[in-house]
Image 1: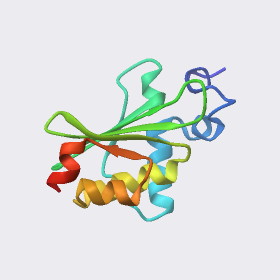
Image 2: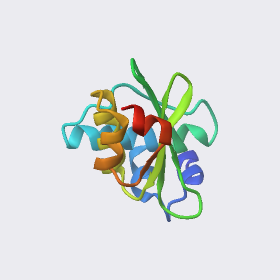
Image 3: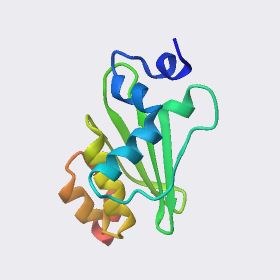
Length: 128
């Protein structure tokens, strides 16, 4: 069994195993749908190389991790080192759409309205 198969679990994430991990799968999904996720990086070592992905831009950063007991993708949007929004999605496409819109500068309140699985830090919703 390959490192990626062991790290991801073929049962929950067969598509990610086939694509070599989360960062590769996010990039491929973005390309397939004409979305811009910028330059994605994978975790540093071990299991995280396949189960985590991050993207940084002028606005802040996005971190995506995999659920371990069920298939879902956890996403955190950060500005100034502080998580401003987070959520879980069961499919890669909405995660990629969030990253694309985030990079485009859409206000947090609009993100939360467009992607109901996101929870925005309350003070930030009012400030947008």
